[in-house]
Every structure is written in structure tokens, then in C-alpha cells.
Length: 478
Image (cartoon, rainbow, N blue to C red; front, side, top):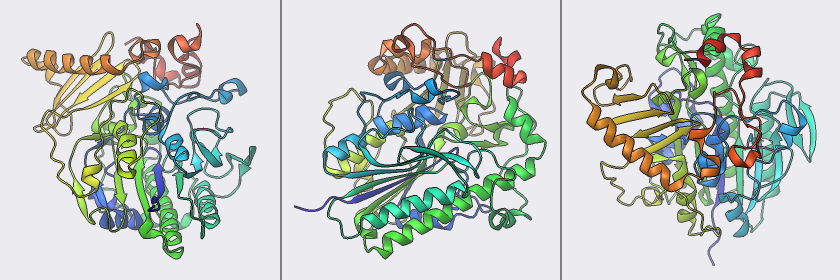
């Protein structure tokens, strides 16, 4: 029986699709990720399922949408009760499927899907960040079940743990799955990154990012960054390059072990990010109302498996993070044992170099609490429940999403058609017990289980957030 390929899954944090050399950015230094693209396949239209970290990661792992797995916002861990919540308890993931089929599963880095100190979802090796982000020096990490402060630069600590795990797999017959989850390039960016990387950008003109007037709906982060935008850009770009160096070490280790050709390597990000795009800094919760701009929902996605996936290929198919689980299992010829109602479709034929020509009616769906998006090849429609404002963009004539067609009028028929398509699709997959359209998600973090799963206690409150970020308060009543 042929041995299954090993898998190294690398996920960055808050990384815009525009922030890689292989995507056309001539200023950022990302040679190792670019090499993955040169030796594998890069997807130009890969979308996260929700434009914020925790729900996006949960959807990647489970193949379900937030209104199925119940994680609707980034997860707060302000106290022990919140930290201990295992949001995915009893749910099925592709890592469980891999473990059921003989894989040794390892986590190195960010989890942020609840109960970060607990080994779960088929993993056995567990080196995890306690939270969703924070300082790069002194990061709170769990190792062997013990919480401690990691004094090393956390990007390097995550890389080193991944390398140590790989060393344990030398001459092992059992295939492995290694989940390398960096916190880079998530904030903070000032005074948090090694000088060897920030110096690379000291003379950078940063022409690869726009410098626009402040977006009227942007909130606190944009104001903070404006105090030293150049310094923050240096930090963001440096964080990407430092992570890229770690990825280079992992690739070198695979080659040193003689298993590079037997290993499927995936690189992606949890959600997108804007560094001044549209006049704000952040992702889906960088504005209120929450946004679904391309920079927030589109992420890098690169897959390499020498001798199996065509080298240097670029795929322009519209695919989503909820497609990843069925794709991975299809590629490995494995089955999910839970028979769940998942919306995703496998794009494994594209990975195998087979014809994968999508019909023009193929669409991608996103949700962030009571905000939902349907995006086709040309048009994007954003529905905000219950009051709006809704948005409709023609991405062919307006790729920058500057002209909301619903303001000028004349597109009522198209809006009705797209809204019907969107609502029909979501009706097939939403669990009414935890329906995001009924959740009071402000982008201020989730504090408990959603909907009926919370047993009468709301999982979303922006009261503490408003105290910490008073500029947010006026937007609450819009």
C-alpha cells in the first residue's frame, strides 16, 4: 500500500493577498513563499469564509460556515471561563479525519478556536498561543499543557517548535500533518520585530499600498496607525519577511530529511487585511458597519507537491476556505466519517492538473455575524441584516469597490436576484440554533457560545469594547 503524503499546512494571520512578491508586490521580501508558488500552484481568487480570524480558522478546519460551527467573531479570553470554552467540542474536522486514517497531527502556533490549552481535534503534539495575538516578545504560549511567557521572538519560537516536531518524524513510516500557525503579520507592528528585518524596509517608499483619506466608517485601529503610518508599514512588511524566513527553514528541513517530494505544503492566511486600502487599516471589523471588501475577504493560497501538482501554475477559479476540507480529503482519497452537511466542493482536480473550468455562475459566500456576501466573477452583493446599508459592486468596472450601485439606483432587479441566491444558499446550511444573522456581532469579540448553545447568555457584547475604544461608540447607533 502506497504511503500517504505528509502535509505541512502553514497559515499566516491577517495577511492581505496583495502582500507577497508572487502576487505582484515588488516591495515586500518573500522569497520562500514565492518559491512555493514557483514550485506549485497559486490561487488568485481564494476567499476566507469570514473576514476575521476565529470564524475563518474554524471554517477552514471543519469545512462548515460560521452559522454551522457557531464561531462568529474573534474569541475573547478575558477571563478563565472564556479561555476554557471549547467552541468546537463535538464537531468534526479534517484533522480528525486525518487522525482516523493514521496521521500524526501536530500544532505549532496560533489556535484561537477555544480552549487553547487543551489538545483537541485529532492533534497529539500541541504548542499553542493562548490568545489571538499580542506582543511578539513575551507571548503567552502553552507547551506540554503549561502556560508560560515565550521570551523569544514568537515567529522564531513557532518555527523552532515545528522543526523540532519534524526531527521526531525522521525514519517514521506514519504520515504526519503539521499545522504551522504564525501570528505574523498581525499587530503589533511598532517595536516588536527584529532589526534585521525592519532595516530591510528603512528606505522603502511603500508604493505598493495606497495612501488614501480616512474611510468615514473606519474605527480605532486606523486612528492609532495614523500616528506613525510609516513605522507600522515597516513593522507589517518586516513581520511577513520574518515569517517567510521561518518558512524557508521548514522547507530546508523537509529537503534535509529527504521528504520534500513526499510532502504536500499549503500556504494561506486566515483572513485578508488592508494597510491603508480603502482608507483604513484592518480587516472585516476595521469599519462599522463591518465590511466585506476584497482586501478583507481574499487571501493568499499556494499548494506545492513536487511531481503531483503542476509547478508555476496559477488558477483563477473562485474557491473558498469551506472548499478546503473536501479538497484535501479528495486529494488524499479519504472520506469524512461524519457525513456532515458541508457547502464546499473539491477543487482537487485543479491540483492534479486536470481541467477545472468553472461556470460563470459559480459564487463565493461569506458571513460575519448579520452581514453576508455573495461574490461572483463580476458582481458582489453585501447584505447587512436587518437594516443595511447594503452594497452592490461591479468588480469589472470598479475593482476598487468605490461605487455602490445601490446608491445611484437602477439595479433593483440584479439586487433582488443576488439576494435571493444568497438567502437560498444560506438556508441550506445555516443551523437555526446559531444563525449568525440573528447574532449581535459588532466585531468586538465573542465571549460565549452563540444562539441557543449559549443557554440564554449572549455571546456578543460591545460594552467592554466601547469602554476600551470610546471612538467606537458613535458607530453603534448607525
